[in-house]
Amino acid sequence: MINQILSLNPIVQAGLATLFTWSITAIGASLVYFFKKINKNLMDGMLGFAGGVMIAASFFSLIAPAITMAENLKLIPWLVVFIGFFSGGLLLFIGDKIYDIYEKRHPKKDDHFNKKRCIMLVSSITLHNIPEGMAVGVAFGSVVYGLEGATLIAAWTLALGIGLQNFPEGTAVSMPLRREGLSRNKSFFIGQLSGIVEPIAGVIGAILIIKVQILLPFLLAFAAGAMIYVVVEELIPESQTNKKKDLMALFTLIGFSIMMILDIALG
Image (tube, rainbow, N blue to C red; front, side, top):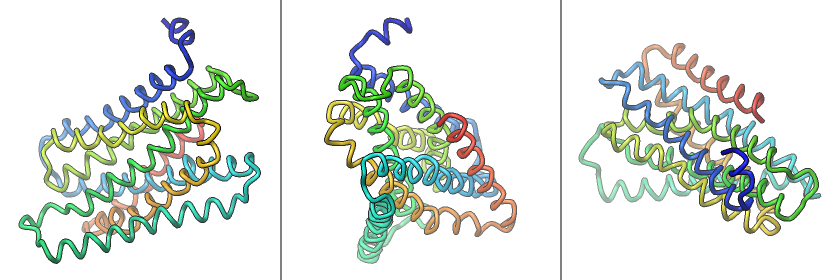
């Protein structure tokens, strides 16, 4: 079975590998089915957990690799990362303001469901998954082009690492959505949907590696900026409305620690 997969065209393998990373996202999102009632402490804790996951992913999965890639491509690392990071956060800031204007003109009927928070959360995780999918695609595409150090084993190892990182990310989307009042089915569907961009980006990255490679550092930093904006603007402030603020902060540390371990151990 393994030999058959390794004998396939590397671009096909890129598609299979990123389908695997998406499936792990779906498994993480499926945890929403294991909770029967919406407990405020639990859901606030999951918001804090999601914030920790996203902070860790922003640095270890996005900014650090972006710096390394920029250096390898003979770019100016700090400039590329700054432009990408600030652009990602600025995009969500502008989107935030546009949504505020829309909301004033179309007041929401249901005070419990915060559409803006949900849209920002899903958007940031999705943006984060696009460059990750491209990174896997580039790894497989490098084999096609015979680039130095490129092997199928290394590409599959990268896919495995990203896939395992996606587990808490799927949970980080579906659980807060459930907290906002969405049904389990909708929360799961949107949670797994945030990862479906990876197979698309993976195949594109494998096909267009020579052109895409120089954009990857910017895209990685861009996704990091978007994620940090959501964490600071929505997730942590909302989790801190809980009476047990110290416990919610602990969940943020747990989320950060789990994501950090996955990134370092499997990176």
